[in-house]
Length: 350
Image 1 (cartoon, rainbow, N blue to C red):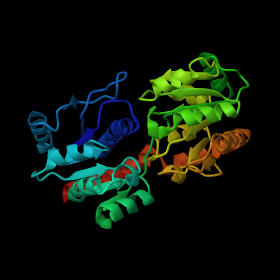
Image 2: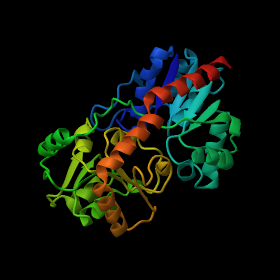
Image 3: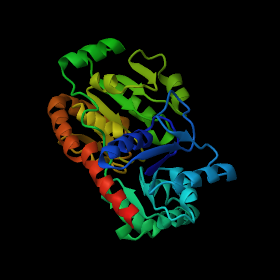
Image 4: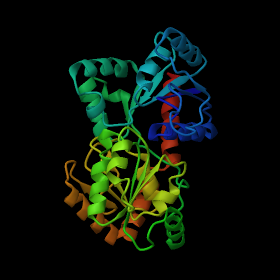
């Protein structure tokens, strides 16, 4: 039995991946129990077996430890799941595997007290999983985790998650969203938080003459509504249950984050045959290149991003086809689930 700990039940990248991985591991002989450390705050959230919202207080900690007692291994998926897994397994003969979902140089190594605190927790984990080699190097160098206890397993999505875009799907999606049939359409999908830089992305897309789809919610939603709410070319969709129509309607997916891991939406866009323009931060350069889209500097201005959008859209179908091939080869859930199954069996056996 594998206990998967999620930071929350919100439908965000790490949580969506964790529930998909848990399901993919069952046919591989690894049953799952999914526990969130906070309830969903927007929409229905992801399916979980239990929410332990007071995990860092005595009653919640006791419940986490009870849950861990009956499992062969505990897997923590990002952020609060690191201290959550530490609490669940402290003093228990249950191995803990932590999945680092973002750029560890940004979330864990910013100050020496934080680096010390995070390092202590990472070093007591049986394994830490990084999404790309550079992140693994940071975990070893910044936190003192032995290289032999750091694994690289990329993010993933089911290859059948999104049907490839074609003329009929694009026309139907644009009609449903009220978009111009022949417009350049750019999508920004994800949490509307400061580090995602969505306002810069919308401004760059509008400079490129694009109609813009923004899917997601978060602290910057009000600022976006204030600036762009009266612009008929900018559609603020909020949280969407199904991202497929957004991607099918789009010519390019734009990611203007200042810090990032390997976003699942980039994989989904590639599987749908939609090319991407992304900033050169975190794991994004491990997913996108000039053959499949465009990587712009982290501090690229609106004009540079706008030019990249126009250039990628001009060769969109060819880049999208190459991106689809890459995502199928490197970021399919089947291949990643095999790697996870092998790791968990090894760790549980030890």
